[in-house]
Image 1 (cartoon, one colour):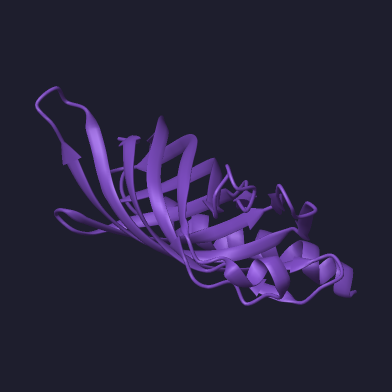
Image 2 (cartoon, one colour; image 1 turned 135 degrees about the horizontal axis):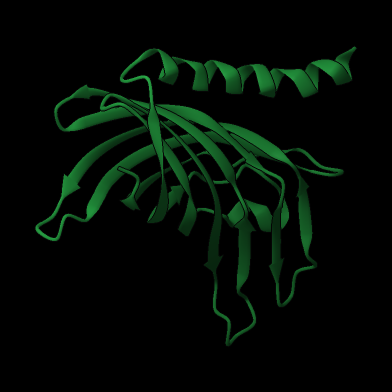
Length: 193
């Protein structure tokens, strides 16, 4: 029963995020490709040993598709790559944390130049590795996303959005304690309208 609940709860959550988009806007929508680049600031990871030092800026890149439902609602599905390193590679004290998040984000227009979004994030892959540290992987983690975006169309009719987001998530080593992976980020997203 517990296993079934673990499988169904993300699906129910996903449906709760996506369904509101079909109740707004026009009857038909369009898919558009998106590419995003950004920086995120990780909260201190509350772990032990090597994980205790992690408070750093992550580089984040993602790609995917955005379904625009009319002028007031959208759903975005992406896969990304985040990586952060601390220490010095030459002195072999560098430690790197990386993760590969998949996200579903539902957003609605709340003002002429402001969209608010919420979504789910699933990171099936996250690890820490370094020159003097054995590689350690983490169990898949899920998280919640809150995002605000300001769309912009430049003179060449290129669509760009400036996004600010907060992600609440945690990771657990296969044999260890949970580690806080929550973070805030600033992004530029290209395409999507």
